[in-house]
Length: 336
Picture 1 (spheres, one colour):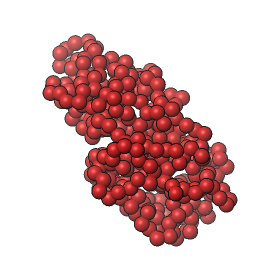
Picture 2 (cartoon, rainbow, N blue to C red):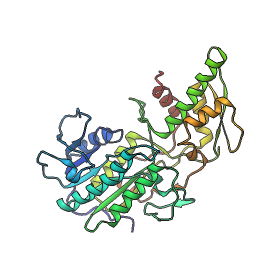
Picture 3 (tube, rainbow, N blue to C red):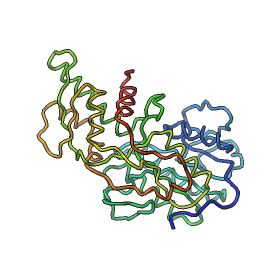
Picture 4 (cartoon, rainbow, N blue to C red):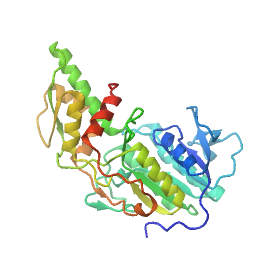
């Protein structure tokens, strides 16, 4: 069984790590709106949020390096983590060592651990993946996916840990198109196209032009993206349910790669085309260097079976419009 229905009293006193991150900054207000008492663990980034307690700490240290007494809590919501596709020391420290200490703290305090993982922890798997799809022979596209897999191994293998693993897909801008979208893989790729376009304009000494930029990928593949506010609402609902197991937080009808390219073309003033195989020109080589870490996601992905999440939330995500992708891209690039 993927999880169990909610039972017993709701969780009300929460220790939240990563409260100022791109997901945590949306999740904390949702948790407060649900009536939870939130204690936020902050490292370097000050937190400006009314109605919460704040403790200083570091997830890469035992007991999170907390120097002040921790208020009594009923659960840990572990959002803290590093987002990097490269194998850097801080990636392992935050995403693997940090989860080891989160699991230890969960056992020491006798409280459940709600861990934010990623849908792409399934690596290069094909077909339909249920939330508990987990196999050590998986191949990963980057160090980030591998670190999240290692983190799940720790949680699943730690004696005495009661846990919920939450696997969101790629986070994109607020569904209401407010604020700056998160620095996710989508916007990294589109920024690379934008820089390639600017390079062409400067190289040719021309005013703004509409270049043809080819990118490697399957135009009929999907890319599972979910607005950060909807993801936060789904996660808050899962926390409120206080279930156990693993759950996807994903888009039920993710956009096609070719439709993303169409929306990006409108935002960037370029003609972006997804092509499975081609010989890149100089501008395209620049773009490919800048987006080499995210390019593999344009070639296809599994289907994330999020049906286990449905009983706990009404905050569903069905597709993303071309207008939304275009508008959030413009905001990300500093345009209005």
